[in-house]
Image (cartoon, rainbow, N blue to C red):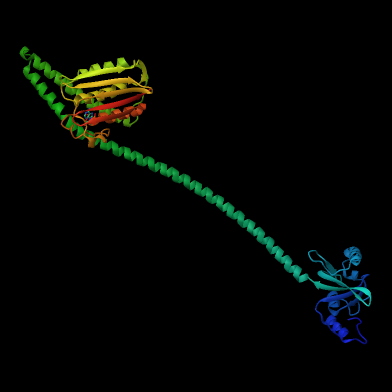
Length: 417
Ligand code: ADP
């Protein structure tokens, strides 16, 4: 330490001890920046010999390029000398005697000694702190970069996963579709097999009676030979053979229609037809097949006129319903057909006084091969109504019925415009 000596008071001695032993660098300067005192630590820090610093300007401790501005700072400071810390938040640098620069933090504490304005400067070498700060900054930057890279990787991976999931979903969809198609065609094949089995059993049952009738009539015709005496009987048997062959043909036709409808081979072919004429024609044909004493009443309401409809489908529907009415009604009964033009299409009702349909069977009536239990003694295949329903579905029509067992049935059809 330079020159606190001589006759010192206890206070001064204490101050000297603190000044000399302090591990922080302390400088005392006057207002012009001349160093008055420098403690041993500051001399060590700046690399000066003892007593070398006092008398020198503090600017010797400042790197050359900053010396001029430092003088200005000091002038500013002197205008309003209050304690302050320098270098916090900015890079304040000092220079050693050998020219080495280092970062420093300085606190300036203005005071007065013997009426003279002085400044006590505390100086802290912050090289280590700066290095730590820099290292921290670097690792923080690295962390940020790493975090960004990680985020990017996560994002990339998410996208990849999304893509993979998408592909997987597509594949699942394709497989599901293929599976459902395979299942459908298997179902269809099963149904077809079942249909064939049902047909074989139905045919073996339903064909037996007409075939044996045909056989017996044929042999009787043969027996009657050309004898004019049996002319009537011969004709009766020829008629019988014809009717039975017709029955067999219609069973086969029904089956073929069913097969075609199922395969989607039958299409709606609408054309302009005169409904009254068409219905009358069909009914006239059907009258030929009536039982003894049966009568078909036909009522055409509201001057129907021409209409766009598939004629074959119309014939099929009427033929089927009226044939059933004939078949399931006794002799001497009335079958009434009402055809009426409605707002959205034609309403066709076929009413009979036949055996009716037992209530428990009614819900199954349109199922393929279904026959009500009160009708098994009458020839039938259980295909007709199913076909009618399918034909009507094809043209957007509807069918329903009301029936009371033992009293009769009414089938109601709607043919859309
Ligand atoms: P099929 O008459 O050849 O047996 P359908 O499919 O035409 O076949 O009819 C199915 C069943 O509905 C018939 O077996 C019969 O039991 C019942 N059925 C249909 N129409 C009538 C009707 N007009 N009166 C009474 N029962 C009927």
